[in-house]
Image (tube, rainbow, N blue to C red; front, top):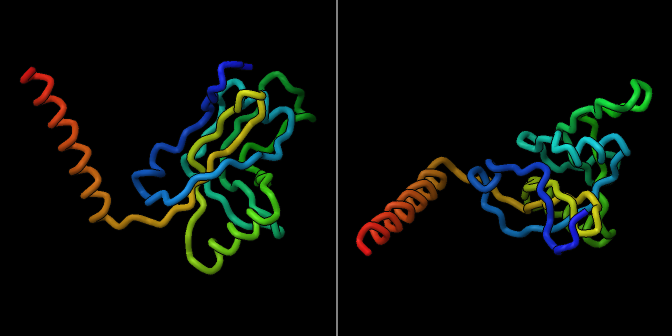
Length: 156
């Protein structure tokens, strides 16, 4: 457990900012089994295809892959792709459910990390989808910034 106040990323969704406009981010807890936490501490997780949806009246992380913990017995294992409920305040939950149902926004997991207290947290982005033209425009801007920094570096 780190005491320096920084977070330790376990899994990062790199494609999220490419495929979506992230309007707002928030932190949510995850309801996990012990073997899931141990697998996360080993870095055995992927949220590339994951999303946040509504299941059974609560917000859940769906389609996230947390590999089985190899040192646990076969009776204590968890399912690698089970749905994992998010831990958020009731007001926040109702606001997010309203965004999903009424406004057509998506809740995209951006990162799973351990906070300074050692708790597993999920960074969720409230997102709107990008069109292909928007993605090309973002790429052009990124390439221009890279080229501009190279020119300035070589000039000075």
